[in-house]
Length: 107
Image (cartoon, rainbow, N blue to C red):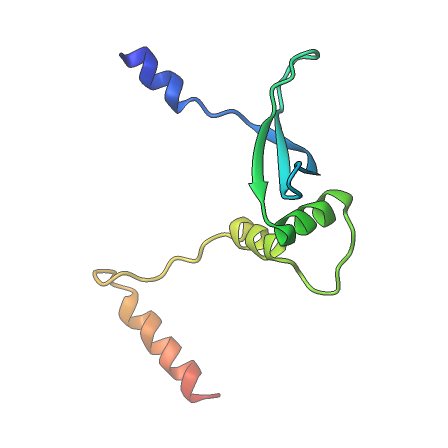
């Protein structure tokens, strides 16, 4: 049973092999394992919306956009180190809150 659990928890890194249209005209992103050997044809299709397909194609092609797209904002958010907020029991919390109040008053 432990072996079955390990098998279910195995994660495979994938790359976007492309975006296609299925027979009904819906967009599908095709994902392939990164470490796949030549000749293996494993593909995971995931159906997505038209806006998501457009966004993925723009990102894959590296095209410039006048404003950041949703995936650009998400990537920036994930890559930015988290700032630690002081917790209730933190001895520095009071000092932090006083500084924040002073800064707000000086605006």
